[in-house]
Image (cartoon, rainbow over all chains, first blue to last red; front, side, top):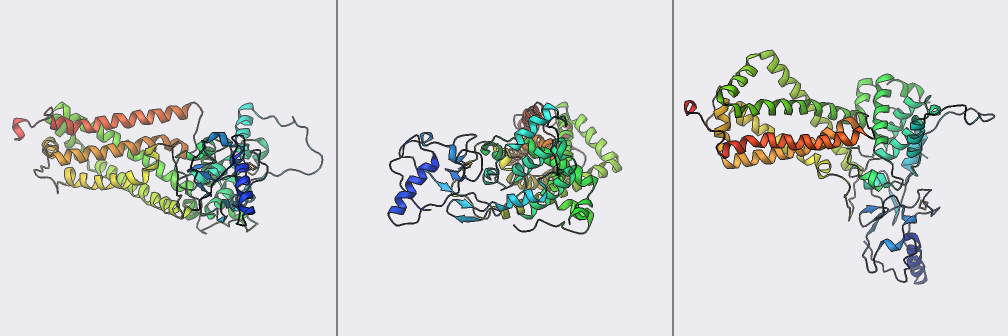
Length: 238
Length: 233
Ligand code: FES
């Protein structure tokens, strides 16, 4: 672990702006800046994220690192910054990890088949309110990886569950529902994520407050799909 | 982007059990079977408060039906084996999944019971082995009798270290149960905004009651509420 001092920090700065200030100073001194990933800085892209004092995205619940402000800390606080630690998320440099494993899980089945041509009328497919709500909650996932990082098993169950739920709860996602669960879980396992043991640290760390219910949804979908047509994974893999 | 995973083993049944979700489901179902046993065993044992005749008659009844006895024993043995076998696999996966530990990690939103399942489990297993040698086989019991279960219990718990370690073990068992019971529906795919919190609360209540139920027996012996009748002396 390397030690840095952050001077001239305003309480209104975001955490990443504080790191920018530290990095500017490091660059001026001719040393390498601290590498961290970021893009939107408004809590919607999911690219920022690391551990602050052992908590994914820092101490504020429902907040990404980019939306966390320095007023959440006291002057003189000592902060331990660490990258997400998981076999499936190799560290690229400093606080930046490679989260392509998530993209590969999505590529395995996190999509629906949509016809080309003119778009359907928006209200032609009715969706019950309860399902729409749950699907929307699951769809809030930004794929930041905090669930994996905070899980004592380094499991990607919350992420995969969110993706499976958000599509599987909607009428448009029914055609591939079984195949989606089977393939995404197969990919999940091959990425060497751990297995969920219902601890719940992921739910607490999630900046979008996605609940463990998506994991139950995933478990149910997977179990049903694998009992129904175990052979289908193979047949359908092209 | 590298290609996505192809299906693993060619054997259907094997492939079915390759998925961690299925392994975990087996752990949940076998856990439920074992929870059923823990329930029956406690209710049976509590008859000790009704006196030696009652408990010994109950024990004789259990042993009288050999098909039932061995049917239950074999079911339990298979459940214990599968419960542990798949848990070991999940535990190995957990160790692979995070090869580099955090310098600092705070787990403040989860229960201690949920995070210590991998540790309470082996201790409970060791206790079960000892417990069988103590009260079922009698190999490590000072005054073992084949028929007088009541006096076996009393003699057994008159030894303070035995009684205390028994209470520690059932304490861990109940901790294990509190997370296990609450987890079963979730693992099998059931989560409901109203029912899930109730199930969690019920699991804690059950775990506490079971601890009190089990612990009451050594406490009863040590305080003299349960004592040897003149006949068995
Ligand atoms: S930078 Fe996009 S969510 Fe933080």
